[in-house]
Image (cartoon, rainbow, N blue to C red; front, side):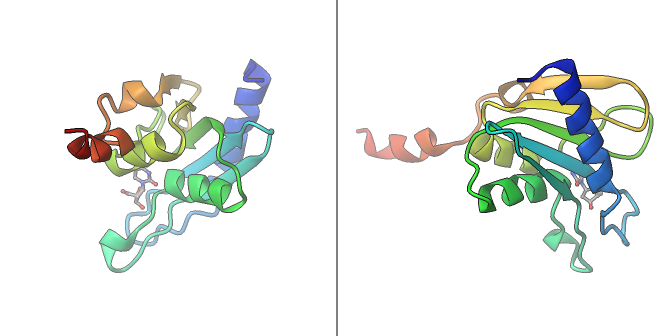
Length: 139
Ligand code: THU
């Protein structure tokens, strides 16, 4: 399913979603697109807030849209933002990817042609997760 054409389309969906970014404070517009196992694509953009900590990143908006639509299996997540070089997801988004899209291929691209691809595990090794929460009761 994840051939070069599918990846190109997912990056294009992230670029389109980026156009809807609400980033009046940073002016740093980010777009993301999540691809579900059944082929659906969910776009997301960053949505900022005057109370800066209430800002939501593009990746979390895209993953939230997928989950809200009932999708639980995310196979790929594309991310794009300003500048020539690929943009790298923040730590909170890496943690959310580990929870909601642990098996996704993450594709990162800026406004240039350069593209990085990574697994979620490579982006966040030894993630805190459900297994860590339950180990305290393992004895
Ligand atoms: N941002 C994202 O949308 N995703 C990231 O992974 C990094 C940061 C947004 C949050 C904020 O609106 C702006 O980029 C500057 O930090």
